[in-house]
Length: 137
Image 1 (spheres, rainbow, N blue to C red):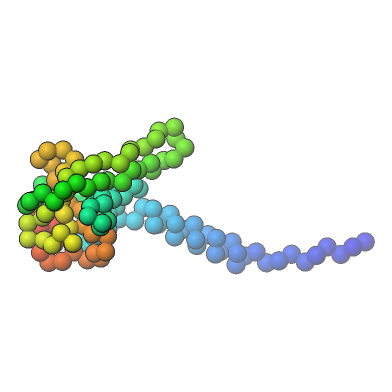
Image 2 (cartoon, helix red, strand yellow):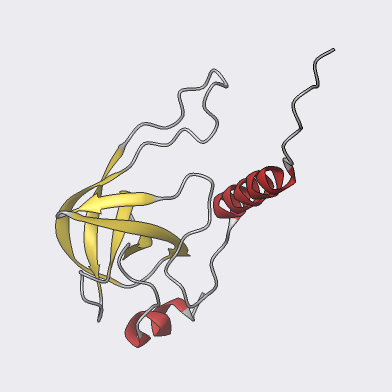
């Protein structure tokens, strides 16, 4: 009769796997506080303009300045495999936000008269001039 090989303790492996899955689920649902520039959504509102990537925020109706040209919102399919192709990319117009450097934030308009704030993906905390605008909402 042969002796069966000893079982390897899989406890640490399962613990690491559980921790990795927990981090992934938190990353998908994490929200943002008022002072951070990070969006909250399963499909983030991502806009490309002039070689920069901007992340959408909830604020609309912010004071806009001059038009900057075209921008593109990235496509989104937050539930792949559901038979729905999701949303394709959207073309829109970018505008300056009064008193804010366009390298920090711009506004975009998908519909006339409706402007949404988008903040450069390199910004971690809103600068004072932008925070003053967002505090109104």
